Length: 123
Image (cartoon, rainbow, N blue to C red):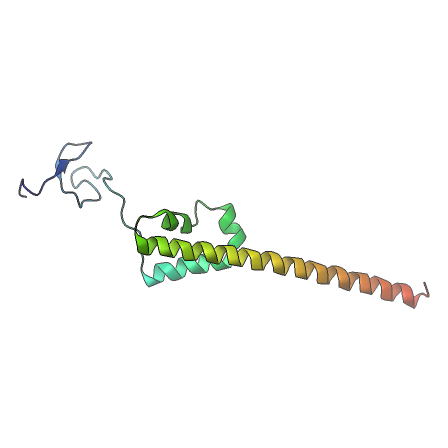
C-alpha cells in the first residue's frame, strides 16, 4: 500500500485506511455508511411493501426501508424513498376508503335485513 494514497487512520486501531473503505480491514470498525441498494429487485420489494402493508408500515416505520431511502443523500435512493412514501400514503388512503365503504355497506345491509324482518311481521 502506498503512503500517498492513505488519507487517515482507523479511530479504533489506528491502522492506515483509505477514504473509500466502509470498514477497517484490520479491526472491522464501521468507517462510512454503506450505500443503499438501488437494484430493481430492491425497488420492487420496497414498493410492494409500501403498497401491501400500509398500516403496518406506518406502525413499524423503523422497519420500513422507505425512511432511510428518503433521507439518503444519493439522488437515486432518495427518489426510491419518495416513490415509496407516495405509494404508502396512497395505499393507506385507499385502505381507509375501502374500510369505510365496506362498513357503510354492511350497516346498510344489516338495517335493510332488520327492516325486511320487521315488515314480514307487519310492524
